[in-house]
Structure formats: structure tokens, C-alpha cells
Image 1 (spheres, rainbow, N blue to C red):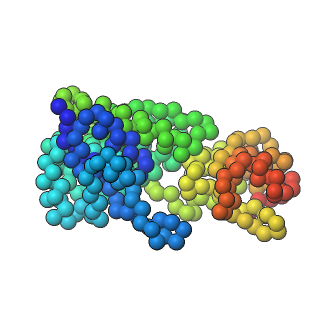
Image 2 (cartoon, one colour):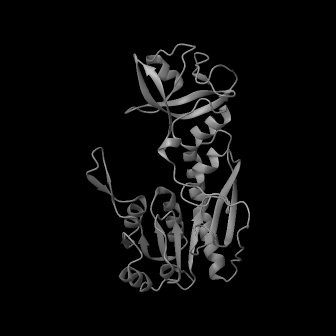
Image 3 (cartoon, rainbow, N blue to C red):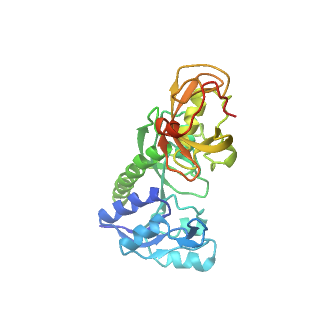
Length: 311
């Protein structure tokens, strides 16, 4: 029998799970998502979340409360008489009254191998830390931050040059398939929940602006991992002198390279830059207000002399 589901999610990452649940024949009684946010160049236009847009396309009821701590909101949630809540990158903490409001509880699709990388930015943090493996986990939610017991896991290798954007797009489809599988087991009473390991917990905090500037004194592997982990958004950046003035540019793709020199020194005509240890080659670059371009195209209009030191 199909389950009565309350779906809770906001960004693009959540959409494949919502679509997979509908395709599997479950009844989505309501979709909860973050309210429309200001967008556009001047921030004057309100834009619905990707989940809201998908839900409206699918003909589903959408709710976007600012908080779930209000008693009236909690009563409205409980009145949906749902079997289960499915949560994927929703963006609000669920109070105890919400966690207890459905017959089978709330289940979260989380993009890490818990207890490693609990929190808001598990994909970016895994790559920035140089992890070679991650995955999707279906976890029964409790009051702690991503601390609940795990029902299903699908491990995924991280490519040596894979960016956060590329891994994000792979994992969101893994998550949709895994959630459908988990709910089938849950409905049949066969979803075995295992407590998370007591050791190895790490926190995937939101990316701070101070982390996005490239420090050329770091080893090449750390810089390469930071470029990968921050691409395409918010993007690692550095300053390059263009037409006599320093200009901030994003580095969206890099590669480990051979070479050595002073930290930040341009070593050749392929945008190879010396680091505190080793070197990286800048592969894809984006100037402010421009489109991402390959380094060769960037150099067609911008002369960067060998021996130049990037600050």
C-alpha cells in the first residue's frame, strides 16, 4: 500500500527524492519547503524554492512556514494524518512535536557516511578534507543534529578531481532511489535501524567567507581539494593582476601539477602556480561578472608573465 507522506525539502538536491516518491506511487499529502527568497540582481524578486517549483508542477500542496515551533503550525502538521515524514535538506530544525506527529516517524536522506560530516555542508566538507569516499544514508530523525539510527546506506567513491557540484548531482539521484527502497522496507516492517558509531563524528559547518580565498602557502593537495570542494559555489578565489590592477577571480577547476617555486608564483604559460608544497594548474577560471572559461581562453585576453607572484 502507498504511504501517506509529508515531504520536507528545499534545494535542487531534494527534488529527485520527491519525484521518486511520487513515481513509486506514494501519496504526498503536503510538501513543506522554505519560503520564497529574494533573487535577481537587486534582490527585489521573490523566487520559489526548487522543491516548491517541483511540487507545483506535480500538483502537490505546498506549505512554507517560517517556523515549526508555533503550536498552530504543529497542529496543522499533525492534522495531515501522515504515515511518515521524509526530510531532505529542508533547512529548519524539527521540534519534538513534529518528529512525533506521524505514525512511523521522520526519515532523513543525508549525504555523508554518518557520523562523519553531520550538519549543513557534508558534500563540500568531504571533498575539502580530501575524503575518497562518501555516500547517502537514510536515518531516522531524533532531536540531535543528524544523530539518529541509520536504516540504509549507499557508499560512493569520490573522484580525485571531482567537484562538489558533480558529486552533488550524483548523490541526489542516489538519495531518491535509496529513500524509495527504505520506505518499502519500512512499510513491510523490515527496515533495520543501527545506531551510529560512537566514534568518528565530525561537523560539516556552513562554508565561511574566510575559507574561500586561496592561500598559496598551503600544500597543493589542500588547495586542489578546496577548489574542488567550493566549486561551483561559492567558489575558491584569488587575486590576479589584470590590466594593471588586482582583480578577484574564481578558480572553479584545478589539477595537481609538477613544479616548485615561491608560494603563488606563476611557473609557466599554462597557469601552473607554485604552492607551499607542490603546484596546481588552474584549469577553469571565472572573472567577476563573466562566464567560466578554460585557462587557455582566459590567457588569450590576459597576459600573465611567468614569475608573477599571486598574492
